[in-house]
Amino acid sequence: MPDSVDVSNAADSPAQGSSHAFRFHGTGREYFPIWIVNLLLTIVTLGVYSAWAKVRTQRYFHEATELAGARFGYHARPLSILIGRIIVLVLFVPYIILVKMQSPYALVFALLLVLASPWLVVKALRFRLRVTSYRGVRFSFSHEKGVMAGAYLRFLGLPFLGGLSLGLLFPYVIHQQYRWMVDNSRYGATPLRMAPAVGRFYLLSVILGAAFLVFGGGIAAIIIPIAQAAKVDADMSAVHYATFLLIPFLYAGLFLVAIAIGLKFLQTVVERTALSDLSLSAGWRVGPYVLLQFTNFLLMIFTLGIAYPWVRCRTARYMLERVTVHAPTGLDHFVAGAQDETGAFGDQAAAFFDIDIGIGF
Image (cartoon, rainbow, N blue to C red; front, side):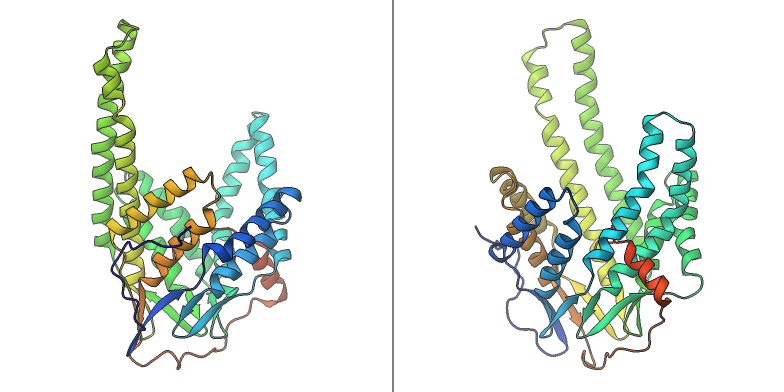
């Protein structure tokens, strides 16, 4: 089963000069035994092994990713991830029980979980970056004063204002969330920075909103008349049935547009991100990416999910090998600097929360 298809014209030649393209060396054939063992042991242990499975998976993909001749590293400890998942489970189980009991306290508990969400975001980002390294230098997320306040502003305050604005501020809210996450990230002692891109976020949001109106309106225009006709005449005509068959195509069109816009959002963030004098460029194109996702979907359907390792490796290869780092002064001058430490308790607390947040890169 192939790991990749020719879905773009990305160059295969080695990076020259001051530009270095990512390379991904993972293959579906290599990843399959890791994946199948992880799956079986997770089932047998009722989910307990999932923490070890995640470490094995992340370590494989990190160590298969190369930049300028060096591989990335992943250093998480399975026990820390397991403890974090147990704590999250303990937090959510009471809420689920209260909801099942239709208790009024469920609303109070939900409010507490919402209030805790920015704190969880910060802890998750600190964990995910802290366990990632390149050339022996760890990534990290800021421990400076004001970071937690910034999280509450961007993940609670601004979304609340976005709701009051009937959604008009949501592109700005999403932009501020991404920019805050990038600006508080570090490689060693060197901070990352994201240039403003509010206008681009609004343009992409308008396109996505227009697609929802067009495709959603088309779906409604089909369903409503058919529903009304069904009330009057149980035997719908062949025209109604033929029209009804258009709905899956409209849903597919909406889904493809959403995929394309999501890719452009990610591309905007990546290309606006800089690390000192290093900059990034991403050669992702909508057509090849949509084709990749469509063929991935077919592989998953016709193999009943067995092709997942190949699908994941194909996607990783496409996304990584079209990202280039431009380093006018080279990569060698980046060395580990003094990093703020959270202390023993804080470091363990950060390790507790291995929660996937939708960062996208």
